Each structure stands twice: as structure tokens, then as C-alpha cells.
Length: 183
Image (cartoon, rainbow, N blue to C red; front, side, top):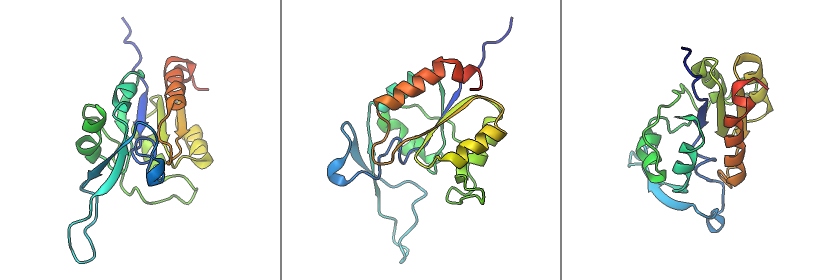
């Protein structure tokens, strides 16, 4: 008996999609609440003092909504494994695997985001949707040329975060031919 196909991955960036960090303090999107966090990637101050916590805005409803989309969820963020400590519990997600990134701040000479090459390698041909605020046409062209499986690269505005229409698009792609047949 053949095994059913695996669900597509949903590769999640934190800053932008889950944390609308570009929103002005008085324009925080509805449903998002601020949290003070001290993840391990924060650098100490110039005098060696501990790093100041960062403010992260999260919508606690996002975890259940993401879990209900029909994907295998994976962190694709500079937070890497720290997302399981700082982000997942606040939005109701279990610990998730993460795509390991060597240098999240590097941009490639071809104009692609630093994550793009490593995401394509990590996904190893499996269908995926990726939500990030740094996706552009260079990333889409790279994935189309080098990833043999279906892929949806969805840019989320970093001042708005994930919204109803983003969830609708992701649900339709996971349920439709996009995840099963390269479009």
C-alpha cells in the first residue's frame, strides 16, 4: 500500500509575519500584544553589559490558526531554535524544527535573501510555502530554477504581520493543486 504524500512544509519567519516590527508603536495591528524578550542572539552592549530586551509583538491566535492549515510547521528565522523558547509558547505552538542558517544577515551576489539557498537545500524537493518579509523576485526566480517541488513564496508586510487574507491564501495552497503539482 503506498504511503500518503507528506504535508508541505510551512516555513515561518518571526520578524515580519509573526512580529509586525515595522508597525509604529501607536499602530500595532489589532490582536497583537507586546512582549519583552531576551533571546540568545542579542549582542551585549558596547561596555559588555547584558543586551537590552527587545519588544516583540505577537498575536496569540496565530498558533492555532497555523496548526490548522495542514502543513508541517518549521521555523525559518534568524531566531532559529530560540523561536521555540520565546515565540512558540506565546502563540500556542509546540516546539518546531528549524532550518539552520549559517549567516542570516548575508545577502547573496544574485540578490537573493540569505535564507533562500539554505531553504531550498533543506527542503530537498519537498513542497513548501515560505512566509517572510524579505522575499522578492530574485528569491522566487532562484526557487523556481532550483527547487524541483512546488513552492509558494509569500511576502508578508513587516508592519502588518499575518492577516486573514494570508491565512486564506496559505490554506488554499496547502489544500489545492499548488502543494501537489508544481504551478
